[in-house]
Length: 595
Image (cartoon, rainbow, N blue to C red; front, top):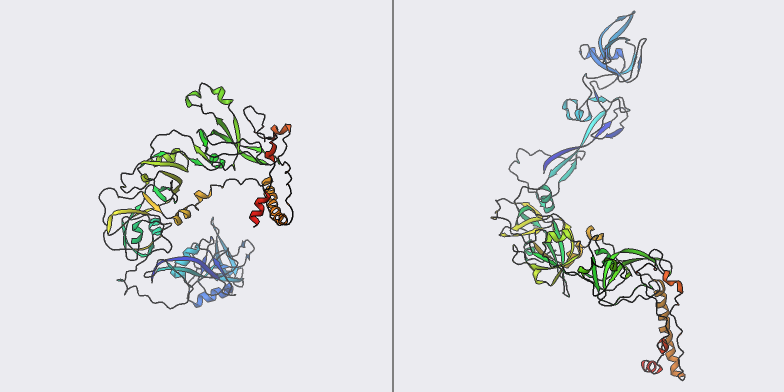
């Protein structure tokens, strides 16, 4: 064991008379006066007699732990005094003492019968707690401190020893109060070299010096985070060369599109490939709201039919496949049951709308139809765009919000095995800022890769030797595939936790309708048994359940009024449908199913 550091934890303060103790912090602000004698004296005569027996020459310094009252002055407690001589004063044997007030000195004649207790103290400036503990000459003396309640006290330091051991990564901490037998072998152990393991996170925190040649001692347990071949080389005894911190610090999490089983990649900010934007797909209206940016028009095309039916969203505009919309803003509207519904205000675009016509027909554009879509609408939308520019990864993430869908049109020239151009589409999920270390295998110095110590914290030890420095820039792979388990682990990062889930559709009448429908099915099943025993009867026509729409239903919304120009609400169809409103049960079908 090699002691590397000694840290003062506290100072134990003990009352020698009662044995009581208290602990003082190292930053204690009180000052201490050392007392040269081991005991106090009841009178001045006892103090002078003890000094004479010890062959001490006058003057001597002392103090009283009680206030001394004379005819001319009151001496406060713990006020230092200097006894210069013993002489007769007004026919009384007195001690001639000098009181130093700072501005001037005052001579006092105190009778030798003056009661104390009195303590002899060593002259000098008051000392702080650290000064007392660091001075070996004061180690066994008593002290007095005006800040503490005790007149005399003993100070004992309490240290914590920090030591290292062979092949142990953590520092051993030993309190000085531990009662063990130790032997100092420093002189005979100078040739011993202590091997101290390190974590990659500790290497990253030390910030050098780099390059650093290391040897793997332990690999963290768990499934691999990268399916790359170099992950299999991480075994005990394998040498690694650490070249330092990777630049830049940010990376983008990427998933493939157009495959039944998507693959996931982590792309470095140094990626030099060229990307082209692809139309984004939005499964819900809530996703449209998340993609809406101020100053950037968002136009989409509906890919699924949406019927504005139901009680909660009755009156909302229906959509058909191919309808073109421009997303304007978010809003709120009152539903049928009086509850607020978050909606998306959109503008329906005609097929003849062109960008060059917008300036000429601005007034007509204002008169175009505006529609409302609840945020929980689960219809499909695809972005309408005509952006043919080629972006770098840095420019794309700076100009557009993520997630974003792209196609790699030119691979990274520095990465010949770049797999991204082979996929028809990619989804840039999120930008992650995390420090990585540039590492290479000692056996293959030309193949460099980046390791995140946060998720792959290897235990290594510094190895002897000079690492090989590749000529020119380090050939680092800018694209690394990640496993599915690690991908979903990354999805739990705070950057993804800020993404709130879309709103749930309101329950309302839809839930009660399901209960009625389930009760109806149970009634049909129970009636099948009766149909086997009774002659078939003509079924009765069902009563109409469509709600009637009052004349004032156009004012359904209060926050976004329906009578506003250009805002159209579709009313439910209340025309007579004739026989289509009747749903007859085929008795023969039930009979065959029962058999």
